[in-house]
Length: 372
Ligand code: NPQ
Ligand code: MG
Image (tube, rainbow, N blue to C red; front, side):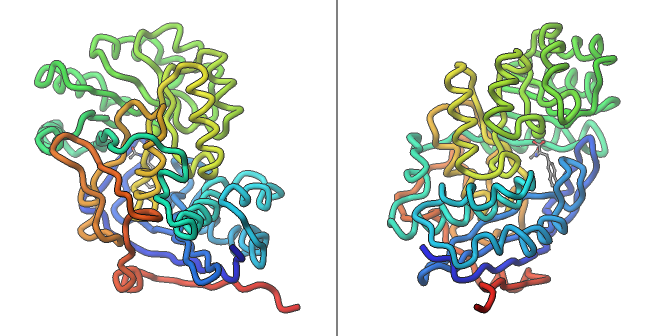
């Protein structure tokens, strides 16, 4: 596959319902999509960076810039055998993992089409049906939250994850558990606590949560290991795991008992698979996180979730939970048993709605190889 051109697009898509975490509230997603044009094929990738550097340091305007100035030019006019050929070409640039992932995943997307195999099989996925959970943001009231949980349980989702922060935690969990004593329930703090909150976090133990996700600093696993020795609930790391080396260090330290895998945060499918493999070696389950993706990123998450050690329900939910209309056809749909079934179609398995993509696009730029 020769990379003849790369198109960047920014889409602005309003969320069906705002999404609030310990770091803030989002109403509209700014989505960065990439297209690799190679040999008549188009590989698509999504950069999941946020609008602001709050979940991690990466954000969309910076990702756009580093792709235009550095990462794009490193790929242009190159010939690739596989998606795995991308990381070495981008390695000179430090970090910027979400920007790199968008390019690498677009190459896998193209490779699956070229080889006429489903992307999930190209990734060595083994599960034909994946388990889905939902992540429910902080609401304006407890009643609104309970209402939302009821709706998602009725839809069939297998696990409910609640966003928590100081002031929206124990009391909320208390009410939810009183109403639903035995559902799979977890919480995600997005780094809202410190070790000074250890006694407070121990109070979460009585809610029998599946896990508490990233309670402490976004760059830490040393102090999470200290916390994990103090609480019974399994800690899951999200933000802090950026590579397979991080995963190995965290697991050897005992910093967590579950790992969240987001292909953007880790920097692409190759390294996400490596994190999956490290966790598997340690006997630690993984699950697929979410970044409020449009259909491209969502379909890529679905494919990744088919690997064998994705044994817990992911934050991979139906398109319609987030978007009035998604940019893929069919949309990602979740069965009444809370599962998504993989198709045998070649490539990502979901077609693009080019007209809708065009309509939602607010800026677009095509990179071409430098003239000789
Ligand atoms: C998490 N996602 O697991 C993230 C955090 C998150 C589905 O809980 C804009 C950009 C909004 C990035 C909201 C879920 C975001 C975002 C939440 C990331 O920690
Ligand atoms: Mg998280």
